[in-house]
Each structure stands twice: as structure tokens, then as C-alpha cells.
Image 1 (cartoon, one colour):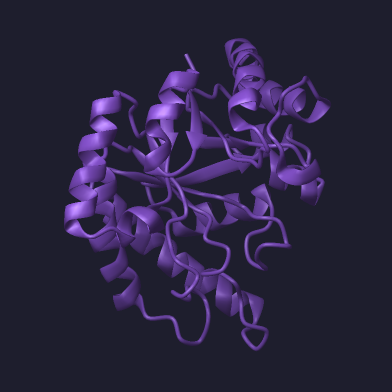
Image 2 (cartoon, rainbow, N blue to C red):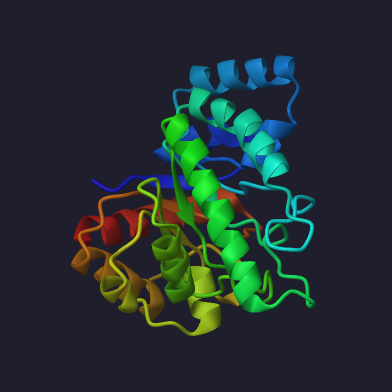
Length: 256
């Protein structure tokens, strides 16, 4: 069975549970920013709701450069070593390495140099994740959000270059749509560890059947996907959209 989660802050746990989501996917940056007291309170509140935290996204703040000339591996390690024990305490099993601002390549840095630095960082992420009982999924982001790792194929190349057992790949239907990739290519690339879904138009929730998601879930089925699917999108009325999207997603995931 494929569980359906909501990408949202810890404060949404109670509402997400009531709406029928299986888990919550909050941002690492928000978790790391909490004081010790505030984190303890948030942890207790989430546990009271009974909704598990299975995944976390937004691994790095934009203020922590990952592939520029000012890359500081010690700062990256310190951030991870402070943040990931909290992630694990919440019960998460996987973190998402999107963080488009942090991994943006400065214009003066050649692509090959930036890519090698990202390989170094990704291996470091893998090491700290493994030490905390976590895995990491690289999230390709469209060129409007970053200029490094824009396609699932590039994400697969980064994962292959990092060559770390705790490092895998994420597919996001919104970014796939914007870059024009074929979801069927996920099979050739060896599958993914996690999935985000949203529509191309306005990054809205999928509340009706569409060709992109039909193709995506067919590819997931063909690749033997057994992970989770998180909704990550904009909504003027997310409670109403949840009522429409959840049955649709459960139908897709049952088929997958």
C-alpha cells in the first residue's frame, strides 16, 4: 500500500490527520529553527495527533551555499548534525534534498566544478543521514527555482556519481511537467525513492484525472514503486482540495 502525505509544517498535523492523510512531510529548515523548548512542544503535539512524520523536505536554507566558491563542508556537516537528529526524533525515514537556493550555481563557477561540489555534498548528506537512520532523495527542480539538477535524469546522474547507499532520487510531477520530461523515463533511470505531486498550472493540487499523473503512476507501477506520495502544491481551499484529491490519489496508488 502506498501512503499519501501532506507537505506542510508541523502545526498542520491535526488538520491533516482529520482530513485523512497518512503522514506529514514538514520542512527540515522549520524544524531546525525551533528552540529546544519549542521543538519538544511540537514533538509532543505531533505525537498526540497520531499522524506520523514519514518524510521531511527543504533540507537546507538558501543561506548555506552548496556548490559555489564559498562552499564550507564543515558548515554543511554542522547543519546536518544539528537538524537530522530532530528529524529522526519525529519518526521520519527520509529527507528530501531540493533546496534550490542553496544549490544554485554562481555564474562564475563552471557547471562541472559545481557538479563535483554537489557530489561531495551529497556524499556528506548520505553519511550523516545513514548515521541517523535516514535516507535522502535528491529532488530535481525546474530551472525557475535553481540552475543545478533540473531534470530527473540529472538527479539520477548525481545519485550515481555520489554512489552512496543512503542516496536516491525523487520524482515531482510539477517539475517534470515544467521541464517536459517523459515520466516513463523513470523506469530507464531505475525508479525513485519518493514522489511529490502537483499540477503544472499554478502548482495546484491534482483534483481531477489528467494525462501527466496517469503517465507518472504507470511508470511507478512499471518500476515497482513501494514508497510514499506527498501532495506539495498551492490551494485556495486546501481542505476542499484534500476531499477531492485524496480519493483520486488513492485510486492511482492502488493501481500502482
